[in-house]
Image (cartoon, rainbow, N blue to C red):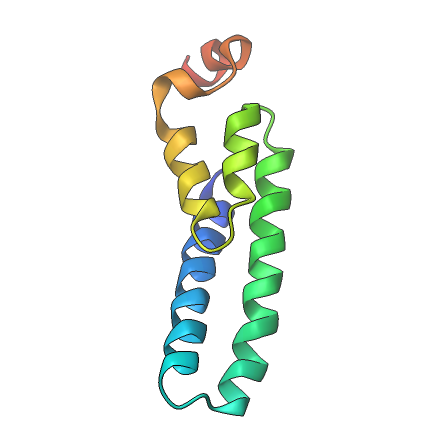
Length: 95
């Protein structure tokens, strides 16, 4: 499975959290909250499910994906490191 959808969702998760927090800290517009809240929730769930479906993801990588806001980026970082994928699948994917 390619990591491209997970990369897009991880960045969208962080951006949506930043927009929601900035909106809350400044003017607190209702339409922005109404749009970004469900968007962040859906993207967060997509990141968690996409990470848990990866066969090469370790338990720590799956746990990192559950962290709200930056979990997708943490999981991607762990997936990009050579020693943090399952050993029996590392040989197959690197060949």
